Image (tube, rainbow, N blue to C red; front, side):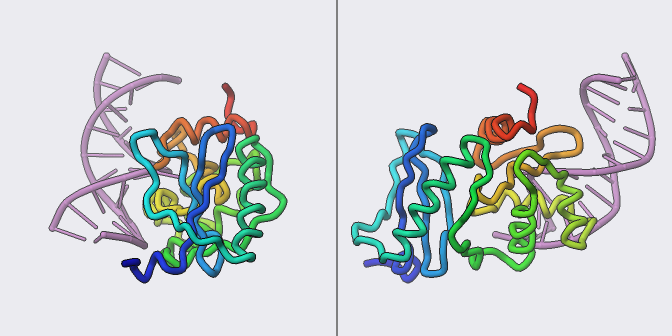
Amino acid sequence: MKTDCELEIYLLSVRTAEGEFMARYSTKGLCGLEFPRGAGRPVRGVSTAKPPLEIRRWHSIVTEALTLALAGKEPTILPPLDFSAGTAFQQRVWRTLRRIACGQTWSYARVADSIGNSKAVRAVGGACGANPIPVLVPCHRVVASTGLGGFSGGLHWKRTLLEREGSLKI
DNA sequence: TAAGTGCGTCGTT
DNA sequence: AACGACGCACTTA
């Protein structure tokens, strides 16, 4: 028996030089992207049904975009992003992240300023950590005033991505 | 300088 | 009520 949640969600893999990412789609757009899994953690709940045409189109766009992003380049287009699972605050943060250009980094404080809540610095960190679409929604471009800061997907990803974008000296 | 500590702040669980 | 992907002021060495 499928849950209500699974019904409208498609989980499709994106093969890259870095491994197999998993992209989640709702009827509204891309709603999740997962870093490649370790061998011990197989992906569960992959739907066997062929996705609707619209989602297949989104997926080809995502595949191209992810390839570019992993090469340190800015994807030209993205499919619609479905942020609806986030709180209002998180959505505000995630939207702001998209304004950070490739090759730039912002501090958590700057993101907080930018959403008009300069004191919510730490909460911004929380929202970044909850970003459901890493890489394409560039939470890795937000760094601490003292250095890199953290990264939920594993700090090595943050380093790698920033290095490829030229934001970090190797 | 560099490294370490304490505390304010705010959204989330 | 407790916890962070923070920032800043303020010690120490």
